[in-house]
Amino acid sequence: MSFVLYDITFMVLFTLGVIFFLYRRKKNLKRQGLLYLYPTKVGIRFIDKFSARFENILRPLQYGVISCGYVLMAIGVWIIVRLAWVYISSPTIARDLKIPVLMPLIPYLPSLFKIDYLPPFYFTYWIIVIAIIAIPHEFAHGI
Image (tube, rainbow, N blue to C red; front, side, top):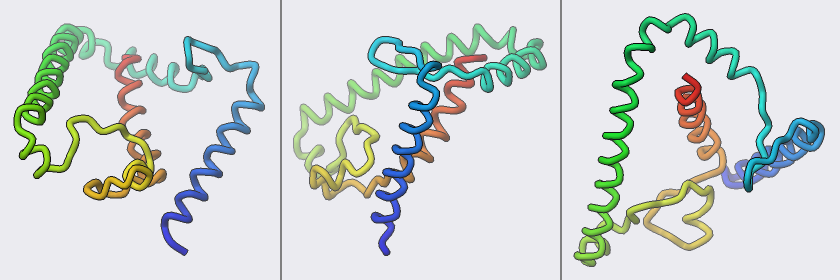
């Protein structure tokens, strides 16, 4: 059996598991705008313990971290604008590179739209990438 069949099976089982989990606990769901959130205390307790333990280090760092965040956001916007300008001003570079300036992280996007120059992006990879990125990202927001 191919990996694609395993991956689609995993995607269906994962989706059904999430639906079942949220349906059983629908009284805890909170709507915020277009999204439904399921608040928990697990991460909050961990963040509180971490913050209390390393308060002497985190307190002086907060101004540097916030400043660094603004600088990095400005650099990121500049890079995106610069790449977009290169693509607009030089169609030969865009045709040769064959990679868009921005690409959404959606499983099976290359297969659905017949984009042959991107590697396959399976649901399993997507879940792993989201977990690796989202968990530390949200933890940093909490700190």
